[in-house]
Length: 249
Image (cartoon, rainbow, N blue to C red; front, side, top):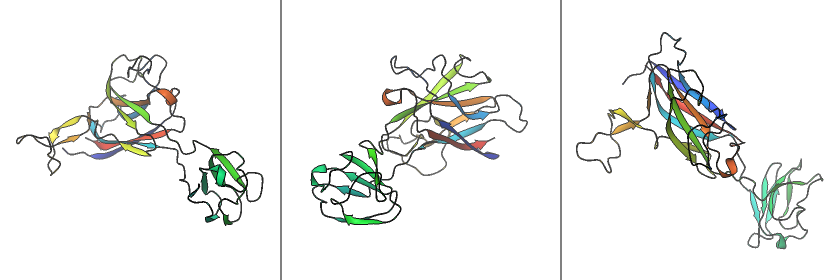
């Protein structure tokens, strides 16, 4: 298979929920509006578009949290630390502090304008001073698992679900604490055998190795949305970018 031009499309997904956790369905519900990830000329207006293939889809979170630079507990008590603005201290045990932390157990970001050096248990973990700290809470840096669902339409520009004619391609979960995930393991197999060496575990002696991806005819679209489960009932507020790569025929 040869492609004429590279394909790269990306979309940000935040509150574009799809499906229903209460009824355990991935089908798009009334009022839900998934985002268009790839539009293979659904308007049929491009003379040089004969379709294409998407062989890579990745999901990348838009939120990032600095890991704790120092941890204060019984085993680290008395350690000399040196902090610059923005560094994070995790107070895991308040009993070892010389002065009680302003908000107790949790994460604190140093906000001072100058470098702060001292014994970790003797610092004042409090805001409002030149050498202060901003309390970030006990769940700072927590990134919950989130599931994203992909759909396919053909020869229509009517948005899902109003078209009534769409297919669920697959769903992929980005694990808790993971910044990015690849969708190749859940994408369908392409019909064309792979002309290269690869992992042959589980294949019979005459079974071909195959790429995974999605062949798209001219007029096709791929949509994506976030499944509203548990903590993501209203979507994934920090957002992710879903990126598709492949080529045009």
